[in-house]
Image (cartoon, rainbow, N blue to C red):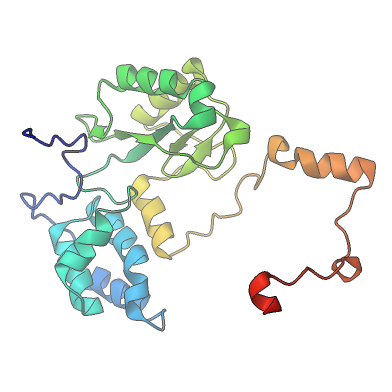
Length: 248
């Protein structure tokens, strides 16, 4: 059987080594070392360290990979393998604001694909691209675990719930104009790089801004409260039957 294997993900697994630019300085390296010191096994710090690299360089840069490898005592291939496995790590510079549109399952049923197409047209870019002015980048996202607010979008990892084509246009216009924007259930937006720094483990003190949950998420709790339903007392539950292995 002859043929040629064609990948639907031609950029997967690749770091852009043609761009060697980096803003990582001694202060950044000190913070990377501080992150590594937080864990019994320093290698466990790799994920937050990569977020910190992104907060400085706007992507996982070749320099960032080298520094992380040096601090953790592992190879650059091992760092690159992690950086290219998770979609939250960007191989090329993201915009000042990173927009994600969920098109999985319920969000798709509720119009997620329509929202993604709307965003492409409004911004004049395709998925995984950034506007020429560097203001907004766009991504198709997998499930954001917010199905009760479908369809959802995210900007700098903050939720925007129950989106419509009209509210999508309004949101994107504000981002492009650098106007103040508040997420549906979170803080006022800063920037993607600032959000990455928070994910790295350096809080900005704004975690409690906005509601932690919306009415749709709390509906079951409210119904239980109205009806007087409570969870059973574990002490009153019968002991579980032993498994076959335990009975031997």
